[in-house]
Image 1: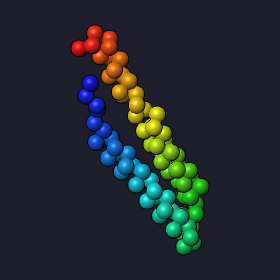
Image 2: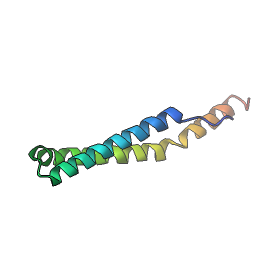
Image 3: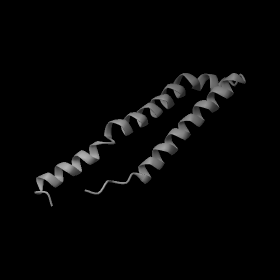
Image 4: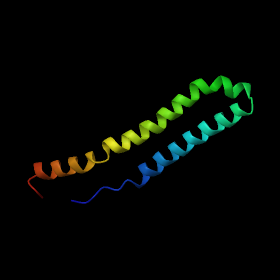
Length: 81
């Protein structure tokens, strides 16, 4: 059984997380500098971005091993080809 490659999905997940952290830090820094816009956006944006980071980590942890289980099950169902 050949192990699946996750190059593209890992890149997209990393890019998503980096973008989310950049948004979080930008909002926090702008709020510290007394930006009215950042202060009004913070209650909405910070939880959403934190949720995005948590979801990406959760998706990777929960579904990472499922591919190998599915490949093994398909191989077993086909008769061990």
